[in-house]
Image (tube, rainbow, N blue to C red; front, side, top):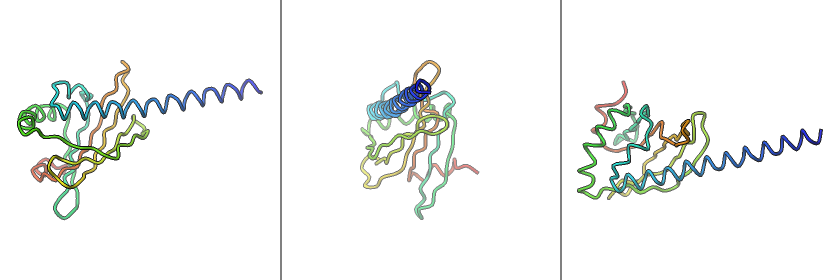
Length: 156
């Protein structure tokens, strides 16, 4: 009986360490993603799964929100087009209140994002998933935006 209890305790402790490591790894990967995004790194797309779900949640002037969802292939094309303009403008986002929690399909890293030259903060999250290769990739991303142009892509 004592051996069984000891085995259960060891497994539990190992699970806690693994759980904490996964949370820290996801937050570390998120910080690396932010650095890559803010430096217009050509490796930015490498942080995403090829099947990632991309959500832009448009915050309307009245405060209501509408989701515009796209696939990774479309997002990659849009990102490549906009990165040049962003680099010329030296566009950067700031992040605060970064937290990581376990969700059924990975680790959800949530934060508040401040677009460059704006005085408001918007919600964002990414779900990071450990791949069979051991690499961690974004499988879902949601960023709020006040850019009303995204409304034309809103989910129907």
